[in-house]
Amino acid sequence: MKKFEADVLIAGSGVAGLYCALHLRSDLKILVLSKSELTETDTYLAQGGISTALDEKDIPLFVEDTLKAGDYENKVDAVNILAKESIENIMELIRYGLQFDKHNSGLSYTREGAHSVNRIVHQKDETGKAVAETLIAEAKRRSNIELWEHTTMVDIIKEGNRCIGGVLMKEGEIIEVAAKDVVLATGGVGGLFKKSTNHRTLTGDGVAIAIKNGVELKDADYVQFHPTVLDRGLENERRFLISESLRGEGAILVNSKGERFVNELLPRDEVTAAIERELEKSGEKCVYIDISFMDSEFVKTRFPAIYQECLKSGIDMTKDRVPVSPAQHYYMGGIKVDLNGRTSMENLYALGETACTGVHGKNRLASNSLLEGLVFSKRAAKTINETADKIELVKEGKGYTLELDKKAVIKELKGSSGKYEDELFSY
Ligand SMILES: Cc1cc2nc3c(=O)[nH]c(=O)nc-3n(C[C@H](O)[C@H](O)[C@H](O)COP(=O)(O)OP(=O)(O)OC[C@H]3O[C@@H](n4cnc5c(N)ncnc54)[C@H](O)[C@@H]3O)c2cc1C
Image (tube, rainbow, N blue to C red; front, side):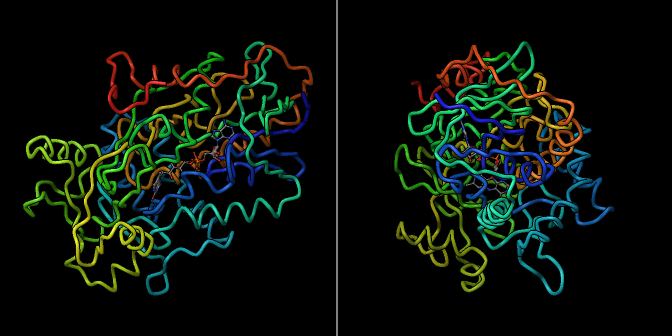
């Protein structure tokens, strides 16, 4: 068994893990882990964009849209912070070199379901790739950040209710890392579902670690299904998303007879429910998204990645309707955190999709996830920066286990009413 020391150990190389790392003090030694390759994150897959208040005046409306989509189960303080701190974080990404699409001399804002106005910045239909590449490049420039790929955190090390490090598995070897602070930014739970847009490797590991260490969860059975995922009739592969921004730009949803059956810009849960009703009624397996009536050059340049992916399945979306059905997409619940990413265990933080800040309530508003990853990771980094000097590194760890218990996570996802029984793997 190997030993290693760091000031801050971060599990996850998505927007949450990396943005936190980039905001930590340069005199802190930081270790960032990725279970597979650095780029194999849901961050990299994000298509539509990042929500942001347009200006001070738009903040109340942005807050209201987020609360309404979340069925008013959101934590209002967290939503206010999300909206108020949105612009500064978008500006920061631009300072790192990310080039969002432009309209005249300003940013181009698009729209997605349940937003009252166009307020989503994007880079074509590959915003996540641009975010991931920008943050990875910036992290590689920092001499205090080490990035370890193919390294899985399997447990934390604790002393009473204080986290003092993490246990890693790297190429079959166990590594004990002593750290002042540990951050769980391990992404979502899509790998536990048969049909999901998420990477198959994302199996709620942070949540599994929290469960086995008695760290509090919140809204653990709140899962979002995306209404429009390319339906190629294939089983057990990652599903390709047909971004909501297509509907934001005017695409419509129709059944096999070409009839519209829903307002395409309702919140995701409502559009998903309408599709499920339609499928039950017709006995068919999919409905269709249609953008073929729009200018084909616009479609190809605005959605190049989606256009190319559909072509691979023999669908030219400038001419054909695209078969879609709902699939698991996002985890609103997770490890309960305060407004600075702190969990119920001392010196243990949770960020991004793994965490439940309460921002999303019952249903996430489109494109609020990357923003949550930015806003709350920066806040957590600030708290870590202010407290790190008071924490002593404890080098002796014990009492951990090497198993990540997927069944325990599945039990939480099902909740007391046994939800998602048919959608989840059983293991
Ligand atoms: C197809 C798709 C499109 C999307 N589009 C949008 C969009 O347009 N706008 C938007 O706001 N949101 C979008 N989302 C949601 C958003 O991308 C994610 O919620 C967000 O990127 C999650 O970021 P994260 O940092 O929490 O996790 P991720 O980016 O998923 O990163 C998780 C990291 O944790 C690591 N990890 C996991 N387990 C372990 C472990 N045990 N040990 C060590 N490391 C571990 C992984 O290797 C990975 O590095 C989309 C999601 C998908 C799947």
